[in-house]
Image (cartoon, rainbow, N blue to C red; front, side):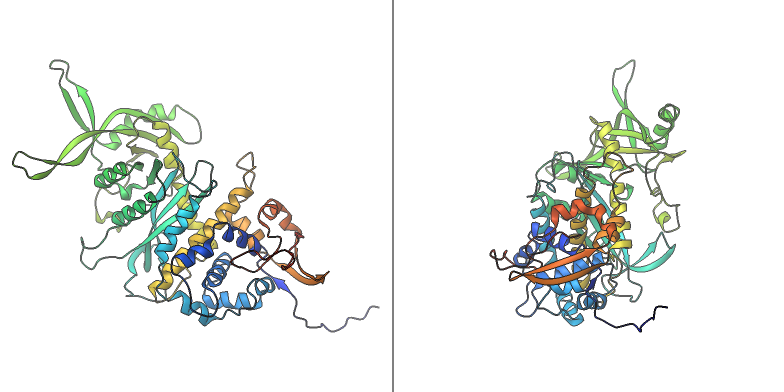
Length: 502
């Protein structure tokens, strides 16, 4: 009979962040450490700011709920200890850094500019910019100046939350990554302060400073505003949105006798009913659409009258009107909060909707572009479930700005990794989801071994066999020569080897 000895307690070199070296390679590929310094996000002494920011990104990917958990992860995780040596990152180090009012908006602007210099992430003609807003609930505080009393449709309750207006890029290649965000402050007096549309204009103008190509802007019906449409067209943006029930549309007809042009008013529901039977006669499943020609919308424009005064008049502008069915939308039932302004509900008839756009010459592109708007909803869901989007409960607004900006950095790195991972898939059934990649590679358990061979220190990372499915990412982005974050690559013979043993 075999004797069972008592257990021996050892400090095992285990890690829960096997994919951290890949994050490090992607971080350095886009020079985020340099961009932080150029934005003035630096410390006079102590731990370098770029190390703190990278640790925060790793903590977000690990879905840590507070800076305390992030500090504990860095203190206990064997791989992170090697990456952040000789610095010991404590909770107060993270808190003091994140609550200081740095220029995170400047860093976000430089981040987008740097992404446009890489051929994989650079936006080109025809790419889509999604515009939407979301809530980040703050259940442990109220009456903070950056919080708003808002209705949460998923929980069917009112909550104190931060309201973010977000831009997301979706390339024709399939790569998608976040661009900018702005926090909307609810004014004490209705009609004062910046609106969400004003914040969207600011972000689109910032995007125009680094991108000059013609882009689409896909948005939901809340952003249906004629003045906003004029702004988009003036800045070389095409737009598409879903029509509301009270959207005023017109059809141009020629009177038989006088041959004069006349514009007949129509409602979106009337247009949907006109082609609904023909719409059902198409494909049995999947997204189906029919374009309706010669539809106009009244648009305001500024002019000077005979007295020399500037006035605003209306003119008829041709728009694309496309009826679509089986859109992948998360339409919620109309609530009391939604009915504060009558007519805000979408125009629908038996599951069909009306899409409107300025591109009346490309109705097929209108439908395909609006279908990509769903990607920003997927981004919000992934960020809240897997990247600790709603787990910043600080009372300092500066911390929330840093949290969301670094979360956008984390999502950008993960989006590039996911794009490269699924690049060679041949069908929708193949490939991996965002959550599968995060749980299977970036937040999976491994063992770290360190030994010396011929005077060179070698670090070996032993992973479970399930990581073999991510061999493409390891082949592309696994660092070979050094593990710690530095400004420059060390000279040959003065570095640690990090072989690909996963």
